[in-house]
Image (cartoon, rainbow, N blue to C red):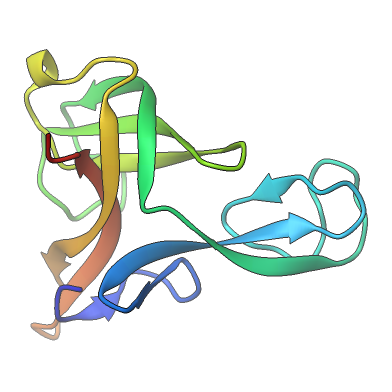
Amino acid sequence: MADGRPIAPGLFDVDAGEPRLIAAECVACGRRQFPAAAVCPYCAADGTREIRVGPAGRLELYTMVLRAPPGYRGPVPYALGIVALDGGLSVVARLTETDATRLRPGLPVELVVEPLFTDDAGQRVVSYAFRAAAA
């Protein structure tokens, strides 16, 4: 994992050198969610169990972001995509690729943790993203 502080707590971790997203699975209906929460957004049941998902997935959809949204401090342009992970969970995530001609639905991708920006105190802030998987 890249050195620095996470952009937000509880979104990702690195086990045995491999990043994973911290998701949740509902104990009542079995559906998964990211980010993890104690209440299921699908059936409103109280009670989920924390699970780790990733690192492999497939790109479902993507778009290019050409102007920074309010509060965003990372580089632009950047790609934003929907990534389907094993187990039926799809997540919205930043993509590392900035050339739209290299992206396509079905593209195998892998989870990475990398620097996103440097905060006002000079500390690197790291976040999760997906990059094209090595062939």
